[in-house]
Each structure stands twice: as structure tokens, then as C-alpha cells.
Amino acid sequence: MKQVKFIDGNEMSTSANVREWIDSCQLGGNDDLFFQRFRSSPAFLQIVEGSPKVSAVWNLKRLLKNEYFLNALSLICTSDYAGCPVNQVLIKDEKESLIRSVNPTTLRYANNAANCIDIFGRNIFSDDLNIYEIGAGYGGECKIFNDYAMSIYSKPLSNWSVFDLPSSFSLIKKFLNRFGYKAGFQSLDDVSGSDRLSLVMSNAALSEMRGALLEKYMNNCVSHASHGYFITNFDTHSKPYGGWSTTEFLGILHDMGKDDARELDTLSYLSHFDMIAGSRLIVFGTDAPKKRDTYSLLDIAKINAIKLSYRITSRLMIGA
Image (cartoon, rainbow, N blue to C red; front, side, top):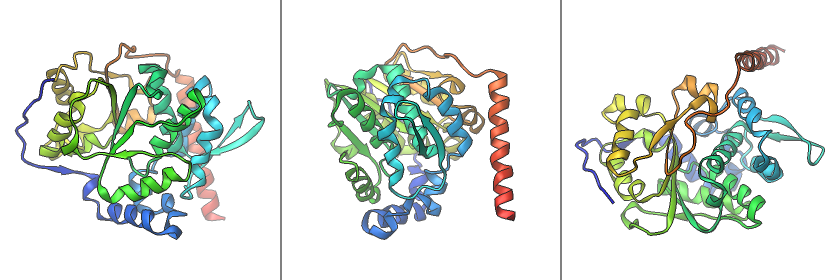
């Protein structure tokens, strides 16, 4: 396995330097009262829970046609029983003849899980493959992937490991325990090469790093993985601070022997709003098409109309 040396002495991570985030994670893990509403606290709304309602509409247009999502929907919706998330959208569950409520960030995680099935195959939810998550927030994505595993294999994941700040560990454990799930916690210093298949994934956290910290994650974690799934914002959160661009990240993956590393189309795998925000999807270990069925101009117009209606409704409620 190739390792690459990077010349950059600025060892930093964007979210790791937000004091309010660190304090809120610790409080959520240790204070039962704060845990009841942690997802509506300012730090979580800023860093994790910021997905707007209209982004949920984009994801639902795709997910409501997805068999795996529909089968796991009743489990997915339970995520929002914890932490009192602010935003909710309503879904008609045809299987159960119910109207369900779900948070946009929860749907973002559900879309990532559905993408991973499309890109890597449903065996990613089996015990044959180790999953490493870089930057786990409060454990929301791990929980959703477990929901899919329960729906497909009738058992939770036993092979999910988290790389994150120690200040987040108690909250992640507490959130997952609420649903009977668990994750392991890894130190970069303890990671070694493995012959087992593995998927490494990150929802922006990796692309908010730079310098020696990013180098260490690449060499100790990413380089050993057989599959990779990264939602990135290198060009806005890393490069301007002396880090990498998306092009440089792809080049380093290629230098590490990930010859099939490439960018997938943001609009057809994520959403129009991810595209506007500059989020990009980078993968390796797959021959998935770069682009798949996408939205028409009429779809975009309709969803933008929904976005406008949410804004108008919010203003009317505030003025009432």
C-alpha cells in the first residue's frame, strides 16, 4: 500500500476548533436534560442539523422510489425521537398507510446509505466489510446505516468504527444506545493495514482538515481502505486555509493506488442544493456510473417553488 508524504505544517480541522461544538457534544453525552434537546441547540444547528426542509424534498424524490429506503423507513424515522430536531417534513408511508415525520438531516444520512448500496452493493451492510467513519457528529449516520442493515439482514452492524474527537464519544454512544446499536472508537495511531474489505466514509469532516492531521488520516486510514465515499468541500474549507483542493485530493488518491477514484455527479447522487453549496462526492472501489437519472428543469422549478413556500410560510408565522 503506497503512502504519500505531504509538505504542509498546518495541522488543523475547521469544526474541531469550534469551542461551542466541543462543549455541546460533551454536555449532550453527560447531561440527560440537554440530551433531550441537543439537536436543536445552536452548535448542532450550525454544524450538523443545518439541512433545510427543501433539501429533504430533493432526497425524497429519489428515496421514495428506493426499495431499501422504503423497507427501512419505519426504523429510520425513529432517529428523530431523540434530541428534539427542529425541522421536520411529512412522508406518506404507503406500506404502513401512515403519515410519518422525518428530519432533513436524517434523510441526508438515508440518502448516503442508499447511495452506498447503489455504488458498492448491499454487502456493505454485511459482516464481510469493516466501515470506518471519519467525523461522526452525534452518531446519526451510523444509526441510519444500522437501520438499513436491520431491514436487509435482520441484525445490526458489528463492524462500524468511528474516528472523531474524544469529546464526541459519550454523545455518540448515548445516541446509538437509545436504539440498541453500537460503534467502536478508533485512534489513528492504532490503525494497521488489514486484508479484510473496508469502506471509509466522511460527511465533509475529512475535507475540513489540512496539514499533518489530514496527512495522517490519509496514510493511516484512507490508504488501507478498499472502498471510499466522501462528501467533500475541500475548495471552500481546506484549500483557502493552506490545505487541498478537490483536484489535489483526487490526485493523492490516485498516487495511493486508488486508480478508480473519481467524482460522481452531485445533482444525480446528492441534490441541487449540495451542488449550489459546492459539495462534491468522491468515491473509489467501484465502477458506478459518474451520472445517473437526474432531475428535469420542471423538477427544479417545482422544488424551488416549495423552497419559496417554506420561506413565505415562515414569515407569515413569525408575523402572526
